Length: 152
Image (cartoon, rainbow, N blue to C red):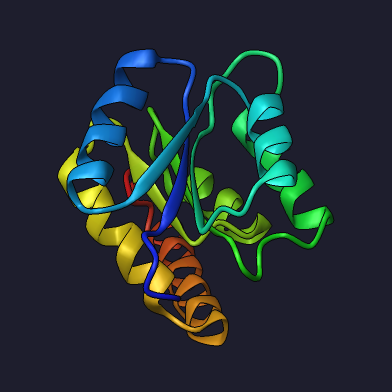
């Protein structure tokens, strides 16, 4: 990544979550944008230079999984970090997002301050290392599901 501030798009239908996450990212020196649904997110990704997207999975209009699939299908995931947020966290749900191409899965409620650290860590990785990390997380979620664990 260059020396300029990381640009992160926060996508959630809850304006309070967008505000809280955005504030923590701003305090960490990142520039933020906001979208209230997957369709807005896709439009903003297409129109701008983003380093990362924090993507809620349960949203009206275009949900997060649909938006993630479209980002993958448009070949935008190699240079774009995607962290998905979900109110429900099962190994199967985490695996679905990771299989599509997300780099991390967080469960609500989460620590907004920790999100900035995760985003920066992922942005700082080279694309190949990010992909290895994603595959490792996918394998972990798969193991948890096989063991019958109910949360990630």
